[in-house]
Image 1 (cartoon, one colour):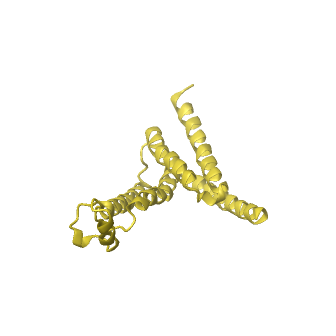
Image 2 (cartoon, one colour):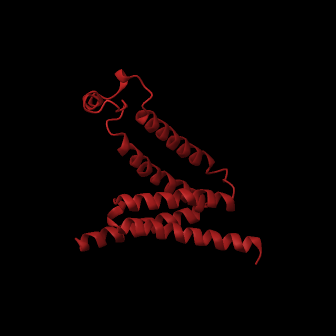
Image 3 (cartoon, helix red, strand yellow):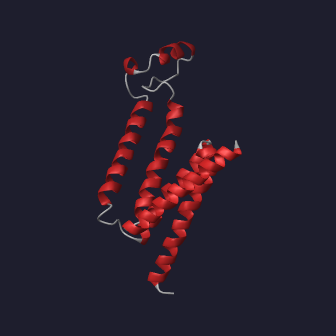
Length: 166
């Protein structure tokens, strides 16, 4: 098997996995379950470098990929800043003053619930990873248009299935 045939077959397999992961995530009550979100986010975040190993980043999608990756990095940095206990106590959320009276070893952070912010980072990364992997997988306008039709049709079918189910 030639390398070009192997690469084309691998891209088709990755496209199939892309759709299957999206379908399985949505069929589990709209991907609201924490475990579903985490597993799906891990899959799509791992899919991006695999796609980039097969084909380099196309010039026409580079600005969109870079902008979305930059936005995701900014969101991550902001969330890390809010959960880091490096700021003086006066900058911390007011709830931490009361908590400090009960447990003196509590650190002051800007966020009132720093543990929840970690999960929210995963929930935020998922749509970015799906978007970026979709841009990298569906490289031409014809393929992207077909993918959009499949997504719209699949979304309608899942909505009808959800209405019938409940």
